Amino acid sequence: MESVNRLSQECPAGAQVHLPGIVGLWAAVCGAVIAVRWPPQGADLITLLFVVILVTLGWGTVWQLATTTDWFGVFADSRRTSQAGSRRGLPYTQPGSPAGRVGRWLGSLSGWWREAFWPRLGSPATGLLVAAALIGASAVILPGRLAPLVAAFAALVALAVVRQRRGKGSPGGEALARVGLGWLAGHLAFGEMQWPSLALALCFALGAWGALRMGSGQAADRSGLWLLDGGQVLGLAVLIAAKQPLAAGGLGLALFGQVALQMPLVQGGDRRGMARRTWPWLMAAMAVAAVAIR
Image (cartoon, rainbow, N blue to C red; front, side, top):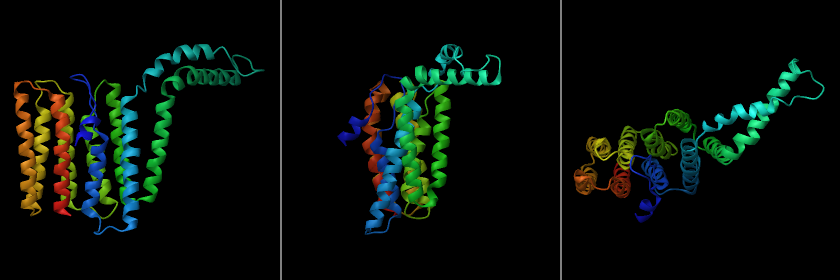
């Protein structure tokens, strides 16, 4: 539990916080617990390994790099480098000829790449390529049922980059991509989807969204608490509908403990500290729900 708190990122009030990596991994394992045959075979462990690679090294790395890197600031220097490169063209060409224009364009592009793009974005771009290769390799090895999840993840990343361009965060997209899709990836790697598992994936993604909003929102903003508690209440309802009253009771106790911890927030308590303490409770609720409906 302490490792979860250490993985949570410290940030100023109102700044964007991110999901601890262990939470996305935990969601994938919980999804796998529901669908895997017990006792697991050696092939099942290998499949789970590739699910972990997909969710943590692939999706986790892509989300972190894509949503925390200023991909657009580098274009501010494009005019200066293009002017420097425009003075150089291909040898033995006239300035106004087609070959001359192509040469100036290539010079401008190479200058921008050398002076602006690579010094700033070389490392994150390389990391993205490596993570994308891991995603592609894992998607080829894992069942084809996961292909829609990969496409959905790509769409969420693209939306998050667009929102970043506008100066906005994407806590909801991060929760859905890392918790919801991670849970579904673990399940679909071992079997066809079942409605309780799909519903729980969405419920816990909603709860994770609330925890992220609570950690980065303003003190007067209580929407994070509503999302966090509401997602778990919906999860409790799913367990009752799935005829798992004991598990629903366990989830209710976990929710009661979280609500007790939330009481100091009414007097303006430490929201970031509360968000860090929420992750172990949320992970425990995931485990209880996964074991109950398997």
